[in-house]
Length: 327
Image (cartoon, rainbow, N blue to C red):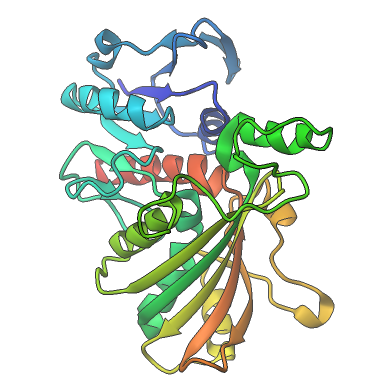
């Protein structure tokens, strides 16, 4: 009998996880929904059944579950993921807590697969997920020397408070999630600042890209920006390749691989848009251009739904991948 738990089931990502489990018809025999004490007791209707959300406690985490999807923050994951793991579960964690832990796999199923050194598998940062898929295609075909990111990240990446800051900011309400208003504004500030002037979000993208692509020598830099958009992140990538490439060869590579969707017809104003990515599983790429100031360097524009591929969908895809590998 397969027991599946979802931790953080009432949150934005947890809700998307449940929707994705249903849509992809993930098999299980028993489903248990967990949350904090504050949200415990809520009723969730799922697949024709009413579930009572239960408070996550140490005692419950020590029960046997086969698989656990966690989206409840780093502190919760740090405490409870090892308890689930010790009780025999494979934990797929959406927080940043375990991503750079050496013996924890960091997985995007289109790019790599877990080695099961531990029973915890980390779901990468949302912007990293959508970026490393096209980067893997370029790495496989041409090799990578350097990646420079600039992200344009939606407020849903900050949860309910981020979405509220955008909508209520239009009425002049002071922000709760951000240090400055996000309505009619752009914030070059996601997560805390580090001593070198980079933010933690930028450092995540740098470190996670190298780990997922399995290349610690890859030169990576990032600037991460919050923009007044409800859903879907956009990422600009300046990519320096090892082997000679052309705009046409990169377009053909993306067009022929089903891991990404190419939209690149600027003459007709056709290119990836955040508004078109929202609610879709795919990663969209386009606006591919040569950089005339750097050798063998190209610009790639990429959009994806940060709550789906950037979080819930990738976690469920990892679950599917694990179930297949464990057969």
